[in-house]
Image (cartoon, rainbow over all chains, first blue to last red; front, side):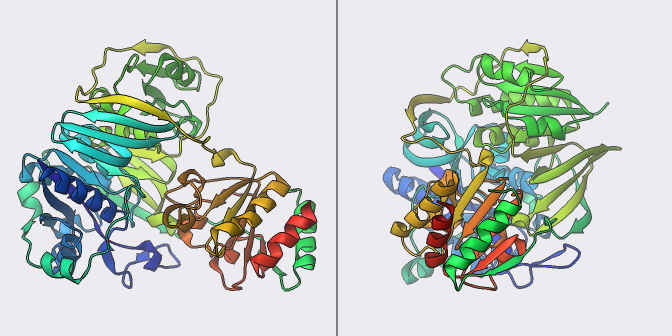
Length: 258
Length: 299
């Protein structure tokens, strides 16, 4: 059995600066393995250990995704090897381009039985890449997955829904997006990081794995700072809690909110 | 006339999608039971294509069939709700159309040879207007059930991807809250130091008949609240009359989930808490003293 874990090397919007015209400056935001991806890696590692499967990390993005820092950081999460597409044309790629190139990487790796992803990326956060990736492969996808057991062609998958949890049987290849709290990922230690440096990474360019169907171009025509509702920003001093509570209650009643 | 396909995975809460599609000819493709198809037909769409009773296949197993229907129709816009199964249908459609996919979209317009849309990006830190040279897939909060329409339901023969079957459904051990409909919400953040202290927040919520909610660390790191009570960019987007944030600093990733609130109150000991810039009433003080005083004043 072969398990691929798709991960993203991405900056965190928490550290980005936003200009007056809404342009996002990533200058000070350091990239990292996107925050939910270690959950997928951990789920994959446990299943690989239980079944003797090979665990392959896959990622697509700008040149950074093949940097020594990105390689080490990703492989220390427990992958046996990694295959990455590092190409300037994929810098800031949207979900559809990202996912259709990932689908080509899955085909390039070959004989993959299961693709795991995190819940969402920390920068774009669309929660769409696993769904589009599955669509491009012609596989089904499931999100909010909390547990996986069994082996190739005989997987038992548990996922969360509004109505409760559901157990499914997958007798063919499938893309599974892990719930954010499916497992607690291990924190890589010095040993993991040193071992990661020795594991193989195959670096591809977009030309090696171009999707058959092109993705329509998107042009940004305008940016703006987020539209904020005008708020009163009325400050109430809470150093006297009783007076503050009385003032707040009176104000909310005057506003007809209470 | 431009055309929109609305993809529905077993849940007829799509009024926000119908509204976004106004001015275009709308076809809903419904995976789910007949009663879901009937509810969708009543929601104001122009036509409904129903894939028949799903049997023991999960709705996601119909993603290929849905994608094939969308590819044949080549609509200008494909809309779907951001619920997990709906996203799978939308993803399959995006793959087959080679269409860019977007979330957090507030406006969609079909223009000459493409689509223009306005959306919030990177967790809500900025807004962007984009032009796509071709069809676009748009995934947003579906909203609620609506009635008033009466579209005809056309049943088509559909085949599920045969390799995926549901073997067991376990009911939730608790009722799931629908924060999206709550009129009043009291939300707790990291300023609450211990799980036992959540009683303070619960008492305040009880005093004003509010639902309780939380910021992300309380749901995902600490597990004090279930995920359906987490307000934020990857959690719930709420629009209550009153949103009362207790000990929440107000990172964008949280406040973007509460921007629809009519009145926002933030209680925080840090006078520079970012939440205060997005609040109507900014109570600068120790929540351990202010919250009980507030509960007392309201009881």
